[in-house]
Image 1: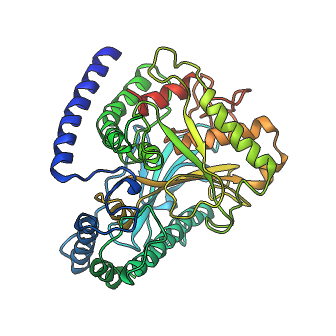
Image 2: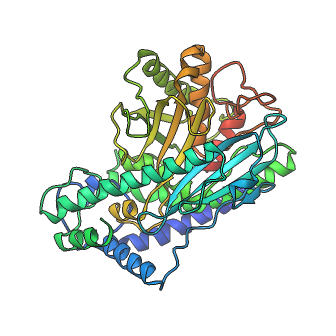
Image 3: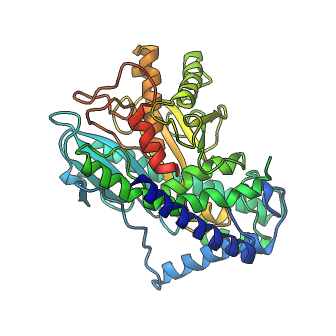
Length: 197
Length: 243
């Protein structure tokens, strides 16, 4: 049984490699370290670096104009678990695992997804998946849920500020402090600052 | 030594393609064995788990995942303290990393020669670090002795890597409650680190009949006596990141 799955997996992997290699050859764009990329971590700027930044700015414009909805990927709900969209329905004694803070398509938006186990009787009670939008009212939530969601929002906001700082450096024609970031052109950095900072 | 860029494409493809296959297996096997599942594979998490490795050293083979341990500097993740301010934190985080590497129970015959490799990158990681962060706090966000959460990359962080949003995890933060740590035995400290890091690797709590570091440590689901990853844990790592 294992062998047949492995064969299937290997076939998929080979297919993926072929598709990936073709894509790579066509676009010369993949995910290796910024320091290994032209214009990546060494202070250079290329049109390639600007592509994703421009896409992001355009997406944000469409979201703000209402043309796009800010759809996040669907939440994974394990078999047997119950999806909760309000923290009012959480069990009274729970153990939180698998917490994920998911920033949205535009800065300042997002959600927190919590995997929760009811431990009111023993260590492995029913499981729940709680989804809290960062704009939801948390007043009726357990203090731990409030802390988790607030923490996610604050971390995300700090990241956003960090990126704005880097963009300011790029807009000023200076080197970035963060070598892992693809440096945008001056024009794109200025556009980003106007859109998000 | 292969050039860094050679390996770049492999983890992403392996994670995206093979990880999806693993999802079904986990559920199917759990059902067939009447044993709780231990791991739930999130394709967008799994991709990033492997990208952590290639993102830092550029050559993590896809079937031999690595993940870097770091420690947050104070106040960057709430009231967290790093591992460098205390010798017992530093020694135990290093020891737990070694245990992770040496935990080979049940992996005989696999392509993995060792357990999971974690490489300690030291203190002072910034909030923007794309890594696993371990931080000591007065109160964990979950209220338990240890608590781990994932921070997915924002749209700007994905763009900063030249890839499309959504693009998986950026950082994973394991919080350790200081009061618990200070009163715990060395063995328990290492168990907690291994347990929380397993969450960082996307493993779930497991309360079945077998020994596992992924038991949640609560009543009815207590940890085994020795701090190490067991067959059950390694099986889940393999199903999620191997093949």
